[in-house]
Length: 266
Ligand code: KIV
Ligand code: NA
Image 1 (tube, protein in one colour):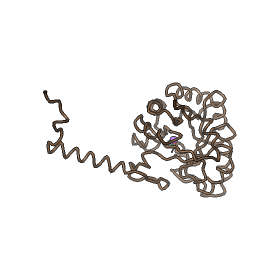
Image 2 (tube, protein in one colour):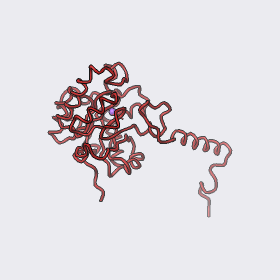
Image 3 (cartoon, protein in one colour):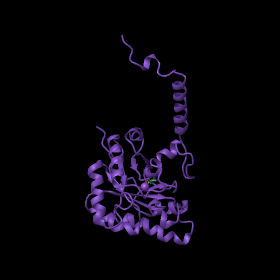
Image 4 (cartoon, helix red, strand yellow):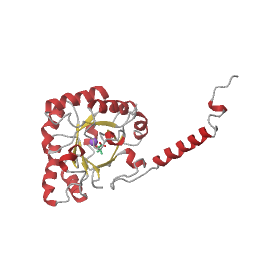
């Protein structure tokens, strides 16, 4: 029997073997990624990747639950973490708990993730004390794109390093089992990784992070303009283009369907 990886198991891997994380939005991709990854993140990036939204702000709780359930159904080994969408947790710890509990009950996932350091520490602690493992997310937090003024790398001004370090420390002290460091200059991401007690998961971070995460579609070669921090490992966009082109040609030339693709009378 294959048992799922738990949040406490991820927590215990600080400084050990690097943690492999990828996003997954669907049962079919979850099934494949589950064979290789420790964590499947149902990221609210799905709003941009699947639904062509300009930011993640328009993603709803119901949408996250639909995709979260699909990823849990399609996997059996990795820890499934579901993003709390914008507007579902910032207002108060009680509202955050109500919505996080819905995510846990309706998807069967093992943890939730929410954005914010110091300002979310009380909420993180509140959820954990009530049975919900939380992954933090600091640095470039996409749900704050409008106050950050764009998707900008954080920590270029070293005068602001203490604030970002304080965010990491606050998330760790609040009891999060790990924290995503997104879009943070490399030396700062490395220092944070060495300083805090919980595993850091980098994306545009550092190889010194305790784990790494990428958006699956970006690393598969399905995003025509991937961000700089992505290493592209696949040619899925090209593979789909070639298959669809071949199908269109076969239909137009009546090569498809052939006899083996129809029900002949015996
Ligand atoms: O939504 C997402 O995909 C994420 C990862 C990039 C960390 O939050
Ligand atoms: Na996200």
